[in-house]
Image: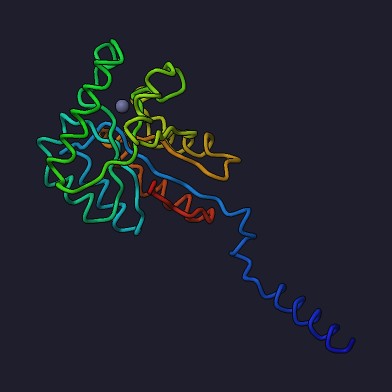
Length: 217
Ligand SMILES: [Zn+2]
């Protein structure tokens, strides 16, 4: 009995020593930074610099047409440990979603461009232009048959939703749309100057709040 009481006491003491920063595992909040529409020679390098400075890994959903002229940036993304997913080859909705055939042809071209830039890289993730929220089941089936995981978002920084967004508007968009989410997947665009300019502040904000940064794997 004495031993039992001692064990309970030890358990209680050790419980009280759980560091306060380490919330119960179930409360741990995660954030996934995702960047669409690049690579951009103008802004992606600056975004990679910020990610590197913070030791944060992100997920880039690239446009095949941009990949061809940004081989060095693609190699840097890979070297620095980010995940690269497919988005589309040419970002023209009318052409992509004209038919399941044109959709598939565009996606295959995008994957081909990634693999030319990064031989041996296996593309596992895909983001629908506009998200999967409204696309028909036929398109979803095509993506799944290709063995790709569909990645949407539940949070935005407003870099495309708000016209000429200010730094303040970007911060409040990302803070308000991520509120209350245990797993926040943030949609951003690495071809936007405002995103490159505010990324440091965004990362600092979520680090201060105790979020863990993750990439899709
Ligand atoms: Zn896009």
